[in-house]
Image (cartoon, rainbow, N blue to C red; front, side, top):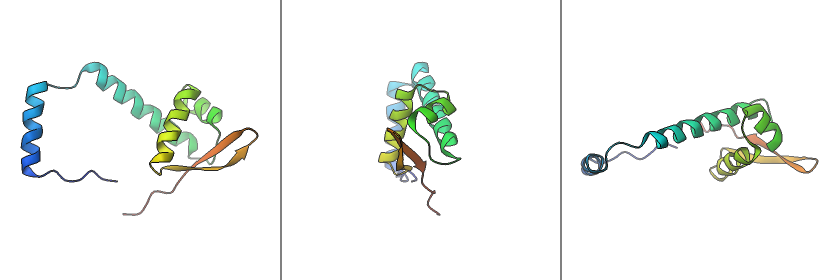
Length: 100
């Protein structure tokens, strides 16, 4: 899902806002970078097929609570779905990316 194009007026307002508040803090940039790496690792862990939260966390090298947080967000935004059960755990699988 691509972000909508900004109008020239919106671009100008964004430029003014950036001049007023300055660039994002280094801590914020580091957090976003870590978040992106974790999300990429979760996708890679699911590339071979459905897995449980503990399996995804181990394969991605992240805490199971963080893995669950990413999975919940990814499910909400249509990137994956529940694919059954493995004992007491839900299996998650990636959905195919839409063509376009």
